[in-house]
Length: 182
Image 1 (cartoon, rainbow, N blue to C red):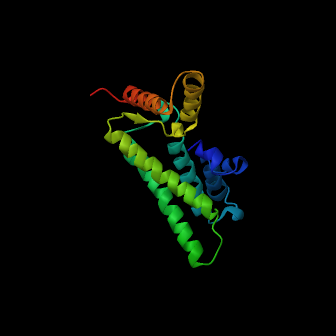
Image 2: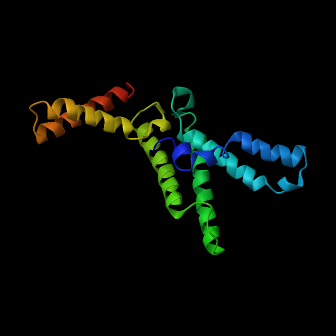
């Protein structure tokens, strides 16, 4: 799950899903009273929901993290997006219309949202104090395994069983280092 905002949607369209875009709809509709922006409240709400969900899913440092104190409100945002996706998909099928996202993108977004919710709950159950959802990707693990493989397996005297033991040991070590002391 790399940076959701940059990978689920094409980069040039993603800038539309921002708080400033939502405020723009509101400003043109309410302050300027432009006819073209009449009845844009649902679009404004969708843009704001996507922006807020992306913010939850892209936390990369402690200030953007999910902790037990803010998890309920952040989980609510993710669940609201799940509900919006379900409703949009249902209404599109009912009206025989093409949804605004492809079925593959809908399923990927649904999987991403439910995975973040489940992983975050699991981490809190294991006594983690905060979660950086923007770090939920496998790149660092892949690089680590490649480096370990290159250094110890290819150039060392390590068989397949020892290779697995080495990786499991590193995993245990990393997991223990990340846990909060009780």
